Image (cartoon, rainbow, N blue to C red):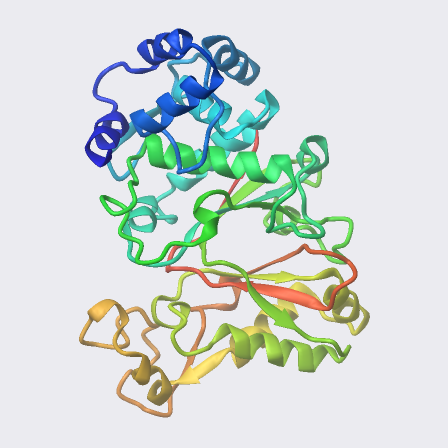
Length: 366
């Protein structure tokens, strides 16, 4: 029901309380779930019916008023109030304690550097990713270890899903209507992970960004699905060479539109990098210098976004007419973001190409 969903997402009239009434009229749980499908308030999977009492508990834990406006979410400018966000958090299967992470993530996405409207309406395969740091990771049991990008962890699954439901139901990012993703990817259901700070031999990502170790933060970034990097030896420079090659493949949108990008270093790889004296600044510099392709090769990928000039999104020092000019994967080394996650027993890391946006990190206020 695309037209009905767009009307709901626009939120030009009050729909929350009448909706509670419809749920109460449902004769059993299956009727309530089917009602959610009929009204278009799902991501294609069943949701938890948001009873008024449940939503009230989620609002109360925030210490805010239910009608407090958090954001007007693009593309349709739906009013994401605390109560409406709570409705989507309930439907996603969250617990009330998840609300501060969800609200902070939505606030972070409204930063102009993130370009949420572009992220949600593009034809690309990317979708917003949440990376959580700080004490709240253990408090909420957010997974940053084995299978951290996969299934099996309630906090990861439901926090990420609540954000995506809000973007769908309140922002109006309707697949095939306002959301023009050619393929999309499974992260459009939920995409939330924690950094494994215990396995990280360097500073955690949020501390590196200037936050205190006792702060809890959420970083948002429009990412593709993780690209696996397998490396079974323990030669640090060779590993970084393999990683750099993975980052600059032809057809990778990152090479054409740049912006930020993410590297997720697995614990096994982090160990020998640290053992050999590499810090994150050195790793970034190495990747910036080696994750490059010549203009000649990139021209085979066609002009970025149909622009007649292939260097439209590249730094000014890149001469798009010089076939031998080497084009880096990012504009500057600090655009390569690094965190440590994944299972401790496997020699794998991951690369998350971006879309042209910047990472945004916010402190979670509780």
